[in-house]
Structures are given as C-alpha cells and as structure tokens.
Amino acid sequence: MDEHGSLPAAQFTIAAMTADHPHVPPDPSLAQRIRIVLVGTQHPGNIGSAARALKTMGLDRLVLVAPQRAPDVESFALAAGANDVLDRAVTFETVADAVADCRLVLGCTARSRRISLEELMPRAAAERAVAVAAQAEVALVFGRERTGLENHELQLCHAAIHIPANPDYSSLNLAAAVQVISYELRLALLASPEANSPAPAVPAERNPPASHAQMEHFFAQLAETLDAIDFHKGRSPDSAMRKLRRLFLRVDLEERELRLLRGILADASRMAMLAGRR
Ligand code: SAH
Image 1: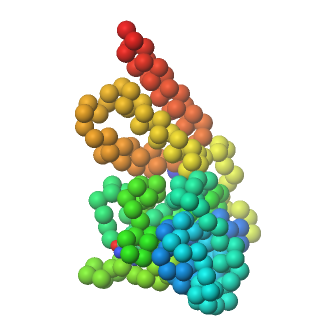
Image 2 (image 1 turned 180 degrees about the horizontal axis):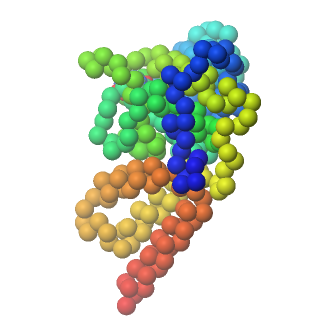
Image 3 (image 1 turned 90 degrees about the horizontal axis):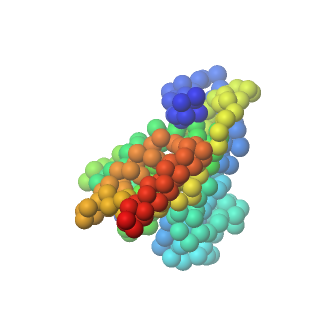
C-alpha cells in the first residue's frame, strides 16, 4: 500500500523470479492469508481433489459455502494425502459470510459475463492476491460445477479471473480450475519479495482498510439513501448500484474514509426525510 492508498499490485512479476532463488520457500504467513472458497459444490469428490490441489501448491485454507453434499468418503479418497486440509475446511452459509473479513475477493468464472467487473488473467490475479496477502486476508472464489457463480455472488468480488481456455470449450473441471489458480499462486508466492529477502518489503500500514463486511454495510446504506433521495426516478437501481460497487471496490477504502462517506449518506437521508415532512 503506498501513500495514496493503492495496492502494490505491480511490485513484482513472475518473470522477475530470479534463478538465484528458485527454491526459496515462500513465507508461510502469506499463504496463510489466502483462502480458496468453493461455492455450492455438487460432487464431494471435487472437494477432495481441490484439497489435494491446494496442498500440492503449499496452500491449505479451504472454505466451503453451502456444499450440496458435505465431504464424505469419496472426498477423502480423492484428497489422497491432503486429509488435513479437508479436516480443517470451514463451512459458511453464504459467500458474503465466507469473505467478510477479506480485503481482496476474486471470483473465478468459466465465461465472461456482462457483470461490469474487471477481468484478470490468472497470473495477474495471483500476483495481486499475494501482494495484498502481505497485509490482509484474500479469497479466491470458485462456483458450482454445473452453473458456476451466480451474478449476485460475482458482484461481491473485486474482480473476476478467467483462465484463458479454449473459447469453444472453456469450462474446466472445478478441481482442475483450483489447481491452475493454486499453481499461479504458488509461482507468485515463490517470486514475492517476502520469499526472497529477509527484510519486510511492504511498509507497515498506517490506517486500517475497510473489510468486505464493512463495504457491504456501506453499499446497503448507499442503496437506501439513493432511494430516499429518489435518485433512480423509477428506473431500476441495479445498473447504478453495479457501477457504484465497482467504483468503490476499486479504490480500496480505509475504514475512516468509509466512516466519512457513511456520515454523508446519513445526513443526506436525514435531509430527505425533513424535506418529505415539509
Ligand atoms: N458451467 C459453469 C462452469 C462451472 S465450472 C459456468 O459456465 O459457469 C466450476 C467452476 O470452476 C467455475 O464456477 C469457476 O469457478 C471454475 N472454472 C472453470 N473453468 C474456468 C475458467 N476457464 N476460468 C476460470 N474459472 C474456471
């Protein structure tokens, strides 16, 4: 994070990984801040294969959101030696709950959709994820085998990741997609400054960033206020809210900046109420 509050996304590149340090183990605390979230998984076997994919790449935080069937013997069979990752997997009811404490949330989609969301290539996404993980929690979110992520779930993400597969056949098996993204995370972790220098590369942060949950409370208040001041004038609020979400998620707000915005919204609502009474 620099003095303007922007993320150090381009601090390093995989290409910059030097031959001098090919086997430096990544800083485990970085990997610990990265969680892989599987949403509404239909086949327990895929949960096991995903656990194995994570462990091979030095990751171990698996999060399940409302799986259709809980992990079972098939999951453990396909997890092979990654039972520990499965055992520690935590389950949540909703994507919002699973990523509430995250600073960066990236959603993986098999197809590009018109969701007004920035779309990243896996490599750029992994580099951004690892850069943010130097300071805060990060989530990579994967959808259901048959239907992927729903649009309202993708709207919770800061950006989408698309693996540039065959455009005529772009949908990877869920665990295969997790493997590709975990591999990119591995490369980014190996190339990160933390892995290659003993000194902390990212300076300590001055002001705490807003969490995902705080951003969601802000968006709820923003939607109510826009209604209260009759901003939409009969139009559907969806398109404006999508654009506003994208704008505010992009700027990576601090908690105190969010408090300021929420104060403005509260005053605008109060004035609208007073005007309505008059
Ligand atoms: N038919 C579904 C595909 C689901 S595949 C759809 O069209 O959305 C299950 C999950 O694997 C997806 O939700 C996504 O998270 C991940 N995935 C599969 N192929 C992918 C790709 N090419 N790029 C990024 N993620 C992919």
